[in-house]
Length: 297
Ligand code: PMP
Image 1 (spheres, rainbow, N blue to C red):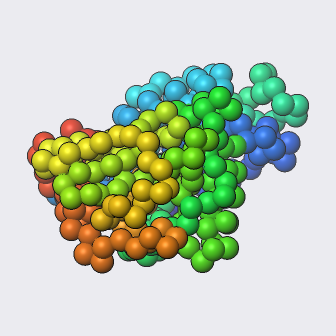
Image 2: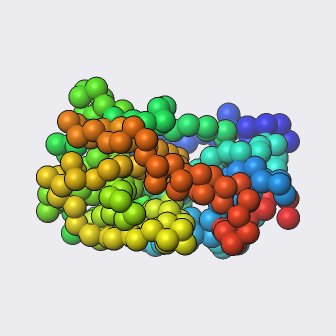
């Protein structure tokens, strides 16, 4: 099969040949769920990072909007790995997407459910190593307005507005507050702060509990750092030494400043964590190898 194949409704096919009808529910109302997963090169060939957790989250997201489809988690993991092999990719980003198909009217019940997986090389999501961040005027959705543990496509209008707001303020990325006025997360990333040997990060509830976030917490604890999950007020931003974003797309991205607050030019702790994370995803640290699912196995 030629490069640039995708998996769509159970079959591998060229990306170009997928046609989605104009009256697709997911297109009009954002009734889709998705994941972002990464595959990395390791000494034992390409390996997908924490695919089990991503596919679990995908299936939980789908259940939140009552989607039904005939594939098991294991079949989706197999399809994703086969897609990487077919496209001859070594390091790539994998995008599973499930969406409600052709039907108009807000209730999606009765609409067909489509399941797609695409994969492509996607090196850097955020272009700079040290980015400028703006606290957006748009706040995160309140947990009573949405299921915050689900990655539902429609929610991302909120992230899009915040990103546009950040760019209008000449920043590279946004950070959103939650409904209580505390720091929540980026449009597609979690956020961490460093003070001495302590990492501080917003606690789950109002944020997406990211898989990269979870990995960094584990690596930090294993390296002897203290990790505190708590509410963070914007007024505290100047008290931290370093700040960084985490996410599957963004990986570990250091923050140089948030609006007028400037962080250390030599973010020692963030760099050490980024180094350990990079070694873990590339299969160089034995204890984190269970996070990897080898593509050629
Ligand atoms: N928050 C939001 C809103 C996101 O979209 C993402 C990306 N999935 C994250 C945080 C980071 O999550 P993960 O580390 O699982 O990619």
